[in-house]
Length: 267
Ligand code: MLT
Image (cartoon, rainbow, N blue to C red):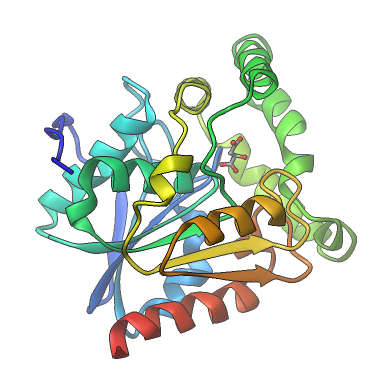
């Protein structure tokens, strides 16, 4: 597949670049930032170079548009260019997974392997599109507190709600820091993203599919379907975790992640 031309952005994405070894890019969920990967970076540091960007409009990255899934993908590849990294493992959770799939679609030569966590290949249904449109209105009229109240309950699994109330407060605090412009842009990008179901059958790099057992947004059923469609893939289910499986159960998530990365390093 031919690569598309990379649109150069005025300022590179804010990012963390730590460690040495196999380059691994980790792409965050909506509406969070690179900070959500802290535990995974700590686990991978010994053997990997971890590149963890704030996507356009999130964290410390520029907030100017355009906002599309393709643009997010091009931004990440532009960052790899700046860092002179030819190929990397590309991992993303939820919205980060949508971006990972867009990178595969547009820049597959740059992808050493894929990690698709708590995400889906399909485009938004008509209902999902309508919910995003409502949330855009909520963001514009009522601000981030209202967005967080609408979004947060679905992100967290039942076990985390029962057993880790402090973690929920930390996630809420991280979400509130996101700008309204970034949130509106991401909702626009997500509701117009293309369907990638067909693309799955053309993925020929090793792929790890991970899902929280209690994920209500992108449930196990979706993860199984993705894994079955990708030839060289494995599925790991994180017990007692919801949609933010890497944050809710970092140790279990990291075991799956380290096993997968180890299989790339030593095979
Ligand atoms: C996310 O966690 O990134 C979002 O839940 C993705 C989505 O809303 O589709």
